[in-house]
Length: 133
Image (cartoon, rainbow, N blue to C red):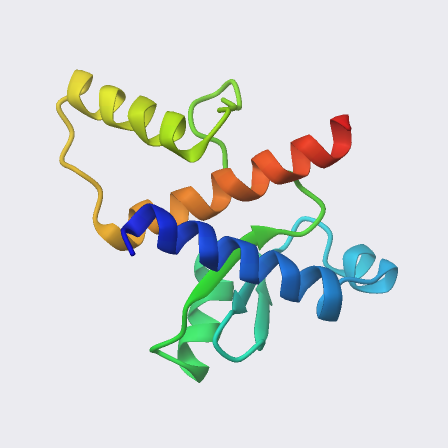
């Protein structure tokens, strides 16, 4: 399984865990705008004011976990660029990211960085499709 497929699977599992076991009106109201990290290997989760805080809390519990990061109440945890770019597929997202990387002469992303970005973009694409359909 390549990094993109792995990222899609982790994102899907993380969203499913959130939708079925974590999400409630009370939870979303209490944690609106905070970052949620779900360990898809255990179903455990942590919340923090930023992604680093939430991720740190999860890594304290399970350093070997597979984590899905999202922002409660938002379509995406972060934006790439100022305009909130949207893509039709993760392949399109990675192609654009690679073009921008080459154009700006920036080092390639590490696999964990690519997985995190793919998770965030996939989550945003799914939320956007749900809202527009």
